[in-house]
Image (cartoon, rainbow, N blue to C red; front, side):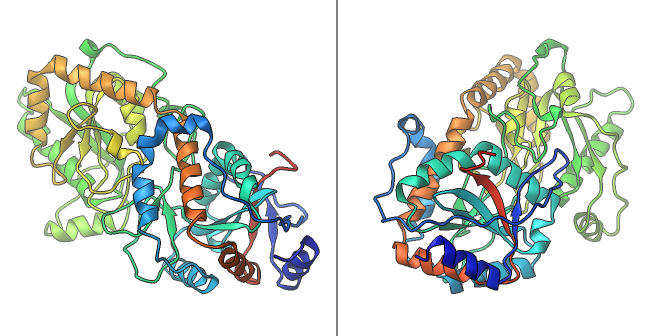
Length: 425
């Protein structure tokens, strides 16, 4: 491993840009004079064990362990990593490389990805939530910086036989990605959106169940055609009950996005889209409705709002999806949420069943809130440490060193300092 002077010369000669991460509330950044990353040459040691408190969360790591075990024959080299990065960036995927060493946590990526506001929010989340724990854990075995390829999208990609392992917080069936905790969460892990907005803190208040309408609610953008189907279904039911019928569903699209809007019209004979619905905050939905719809869609996404909805005191109707986050297996349908079909064909029946069994519906909502109450930030931090520890054991330090050398030799890749032990910021 080169010493600090040699590494600095390589970085200068390659025109590697190092940016000090100083994130504002709006996701913008301040760029200061470029310090150099410290990558000391230490004798390799055995990987450190997880902190003792992580032992009580072992059940939460089963999916991560399974993903890592499937990577035993993965190609880990600078060529494979560079190929994966180039492929992702050609497709405009928000992807970067997390570098962990003894003195700091860094993210390397192209300028386009690192100029994206969502990516900066993710970097801020990494800094605030898990970076210090990752750094403390790696100090026991940081002879060579550890590179992790991070997918900042809320989606996963299909597998490939020769592919550098990619870490994602949302995974679809057949994907070769490794599940990793979301890059942003607050101390209590009670919200799961990219902004620390008050509307995501649904655990802070309680509203009387009896004062809520026995109906389902949803508001959101048309990130998927099935969300538009839900809004159309709501309009259809409302029209059918306009003569005084009891409304079962209040769902609407607050903003139409492409390509979902055009795709939906094309598949419905150029039918007019449902009217844009007025915005209703998540707090108002919790206050006014007993059932909240978590619409993930038929694509490869994991809805940001799911954990937040579970933390409310309303019941969650979860659209069935094969996409998962690392903790989904801890939930049980019928105990923490009620599943509904992806195409919504059984939504009416589900709502009518809940109305007929009101006390059971209230109990499910209470179970979900209790589950989230015990799902602390510690679970996510331990899951991140578990993923890194298992992943680090896949290759010898020599292979990691060769990979990092290749990364630092790329002249067009900015390097962002997320967390520094020296600065403690």
